[in-house]
Image 1 (cartoon, helix red, strand yellow):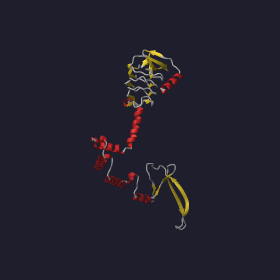
Image 2 (tube, rainbow, N blue to C red):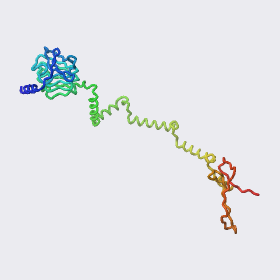
Image 3 (cartoon, rainbow, N blue to C red):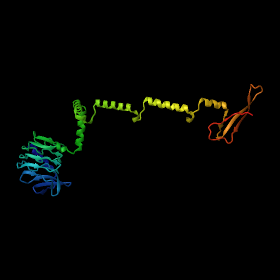
Image 4 (cartoon, rainbow, N blue to C red):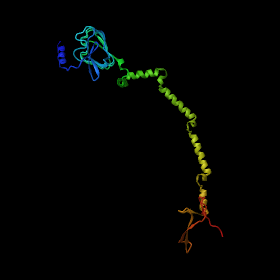
Length: 309
């Protein structure tokens, strides 16, 4: 009784809102949403409306007094519509004959003493994520969480999966059992065993070794053969590869003086006349550059050769 007196004092200090009536229901309006505050019907199985006079019902109970008065013995069951998101303080306080109540998934909070002294209501199922005040129900009441209310809630699913994964990742028993289940299942759930992988690798190696050319690969012998063939090609026809034999270079030196091209791409003969008095000691007399006119342009080399008179 001390508690109820305190409630009455607090209620008296609150600011009264405009109360409306629709059928058996009394309600207030705030921000276009209705709160059920009272009931004048005969009781029994009661269904709270989802809207009153076209205004959606979002809350039931608004502190003191309780919706069905206090105490109440006429109401036996309550159906709350999906439009309701919260059950306020003292909403159904003292409904001693209440045996069942439907709390939809839309309800996210249940206030203080909302079902206190509902002595016939020994068990109730509540959405999993609904916040419940510590004294919303009588001590000892059986509260069951409705896991089906979690369907479609990505926030819960993501959190649950993350926590479950972190827990199982360090559980050696779970990991061992999972591995054994995978190994014993037909087809191993699409996973290959170590033996199967090793066999596949060996088979692949054999296939490559037996027909390397099909994989754009060549054996050591094939590479050696190709290298030998290339060497023979060069040795047999060196001039085809812009190479010259030792004999060709030697003959070039014996044949005479090789002409060079100057900066104008003209073939020139650079020569020096020496002088001597004893055929032993020679000194420069004259150095001359002779441009060869009408020299062929399609030849790589030209040389000067002395001819007899």
